Length: 104
Image (cartoon, rainbow, N blue to C red; front, top):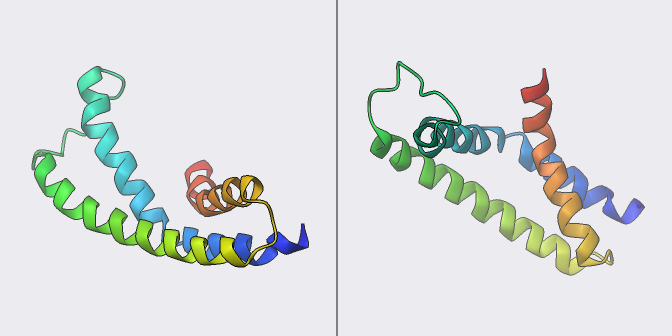
């Protein structure tokens, strides 16, 4: 378990600015396809259309995913931890700040 401290710490740090892309994805899904299916209700103040959101969301999520993927690929190569354990633990650590803010 001590071998996972550095990857978990790095992913927790990446998860702090990662709150923004996670929120944006959740917002677009809630106001777009999930609202069209009737699973959520649209924000009544959101009348700019989805194109503007996609122009904002795609670069933000892409840059965050690229940085997170490159950092984790490098950490995974150097870590003696099995990859079947490494990736789920790192994904959970990266989502932890978003879930903590969402719960409180």
